[in-house]
Amino acid sequence: MRDECVERLIEGFEFLDDWDERFRYIIDLGRRLKPMDAGLKSDETKVDGCTSQVWMVARIEGEPPRLTFLADSDAHIVRGLIAILMTLYDGRTAREILDLDAEGTIGRLGMAQHLSPNRANGLFAMVGRIRAFAADALADATVDA
Image (tube, rainbow, N blue to C red):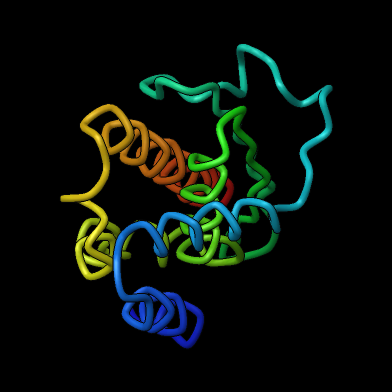
């Protein structure tokens, strides 16, 4: 699955010469994230598998179910990773989310070999959480039909 936002993200990464610049770009993306209300930050919304604290909630609307996300972290670089995931997933249908090749896109960004193992595990824990939200939304839509 390709779209304009994802392609712009990839082009932004390709434009930057080295990974120091790319990490600054990732942090800058995180600074632009919509703030998450402190009341939403709980054990229930916390993403397991992340070294840093990460909280994520999903809003599901419509038929087919479309998901929007709100997420935050206590670490600047992780907020940037969240922003990248929001570019990939926010506003898509549950089926689009489940069909999206996150590993392939993240591979195209070149992040897999530049993130620490803990950061990479956390990134894919967030992807897993997003996919779980989508799978639940799709299952609920099927039950309601």
